[in-house]
Amino acid sequence: MQNLNSVHLNGLRALEAVGRLGSLQAAADELGVTIGAVSQQIIKAEAQLGRKLFDRTPKGMVATEAGLPVLARLGEGFQILSQAVSAAQRQDDTILTISVAPIFAARWLVHRLDRFSACHPDIRLRMYATMQIVDPSSSDVDITIRVGAGKWPGVKTELLLAQEVFPVCSPAIASKLKSPEEILAVPAIIDGPAMFTWEVWLREVGLSGATMVPRHVFNDASLCLDAVIAGQGVMLAWQTLAAYALEHGQLVDPFGIRVRTGFGHYFVTPEGVREPKKVTAFKNWIRDEMAESMRIFA
Image: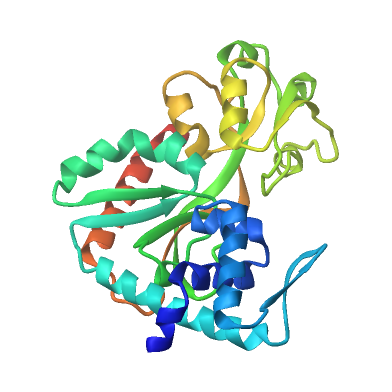
């Protein structure tokens, strides 16, 4: 392995990341450095290896014919290294690393973490709030919670909560709504990246094909919720997004009509791996918390 001394590890990491992700920007985001730094690392690594592994094109970095087998081997090698690091880190039963979407973390989970610590004082939580789908088998993440159809390849999934959507608005707006059709006159706050549209709910109440009048469109559901709390309109929310605001009287579900989207909140864990006690403890705790939280929708 003495030949490894001739090439910097950061350069090899940059080569592998760009080869796998297909762009300097994506590699820079993953590695936590600038695009310029990644570009420089690749230039140095190519010089140290004595061959050009990428062509710079208007469409991005494209692997050369000579680079393809090298990048494939680098990918295999870093996958093995990642699994080794994960195995070592999982031996610490006092640290539980979870990955959740930022919205779920901010609007539902963080309000309850003190209760987890009270129940399990011997376990310290480490949380990654990210939209990126994390592979728990090749990272230091012990468990992930994600919203989707629950059919991600290569992992074990367990349904935590079937997603239901419903309109929410401020108490002042809710006081003026007597029937579902009246919501069509209320400005809508739209969650641009949402996996569903208003048609899901409108169809349920006999208003299929009707159009909501948008006031704002945001790329973040948490911002949408804040705008609705401020009285700027109505949005189509789901249980974990709106539960805290509903419980504290900041928002109202004016009709009590909730519709399933076909998606759900899922636990995502490594496939074919014996579940650590700390993961089981977290899953049992969060199921209890979820059941308690969902009582407001009963």
